[in-house]
Length: 468
Ligand code: ZN
Image (tube, rainbow, N blue to C red; front, side, top):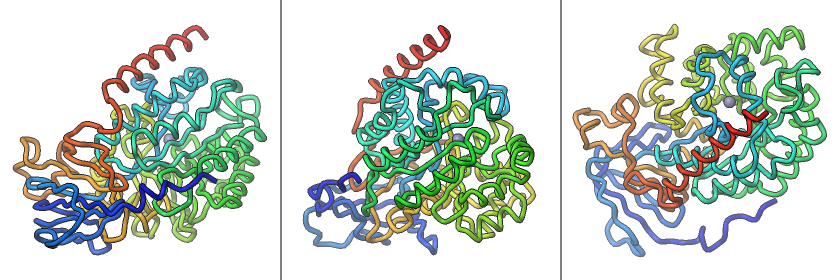
């Protein structure tokens, strides 16, 4: 197990005072302040309330005048595939299975420098858009590609975003009845051993941890039943969370019925993959009994509306999931199926797309969309006691959104402006009390250098993939 963050970083009492801003706390009562303050002490939130900050505070290292801004909890992205940053804009008119078939041969050629650059690009794009906690579900590990897990985790540390690396895997190649080509999969034993080694090397379960690991076999049509079962046992033996894709498309449901004689949710339950330590991406094709099983077991959902629309997968039943008590967060999904790669689009599309379903205009409110992106994401990652709302004692992961420029100044309600308006500029983003974005630019890494590296590595990947 990795050592917790250094005491010097966590015991600081330096204070940052933010005042004169609108605040949406996303606490249990959805408390909002038209003009209020947030005080950060070290890595935690010390106070939140109406009006100016208390007088007489000591060790104030910075005062921020938040006039014209909305402050919210940092956004939580619960599902992504960073390596896909290098394969954006390909296979643009495909459904899931055809899209995967087109991209597997390219992804099978990734190596460590490519994955590092892709992770930096993915993280930088999200952080600029107000994401303070991110997940990478990395499921493709070509032989000889290097330590891709360490490359991604290193990139997250540099960027300063709170991070869960979901160590993915695939072991069901075409010859065994799976979807991926045989050259793109690992062996059962190899996948389990590498996943265990990643947990041992990097997982930090302390309060406020910046790096956690999850066990994350890819999907029912790319993973053997044995890897699902043993993966779940491994995760529970180590006390780490479980993540996978589930019920994404009608084709996946058909695959499960033909191969296992049951639908995806029943298959997950039979292999140990429902529980309050599990979160699953998509969950589009769910009947009432599937939703009840998720609610009964506390299984979480990463809702990815843009990707689901891009791949014509369908509309997840988010209002029904929420009504049943299922924890739901939002996910960008990989940027090969959501080229924008930022989470604001998902708040907006979660609301818009769900209103096209049977619940109409009552499907999701603007406040519910913001809640999915913050507290919902924290719940799904098992971190609702640490992040996801602005409350004293929680970690100082927060965002100041600029609302007084052309795009938003005439929208009366700041939460409606954030969710329904154009992507709002980020004036300041803190993670663990540390500045990660200032005036729309990352302070932790050189964005222009990251852009150049991702362009160069994307071109190199295209070249080696074309060589075959
Ligand atoms: Zn995905």
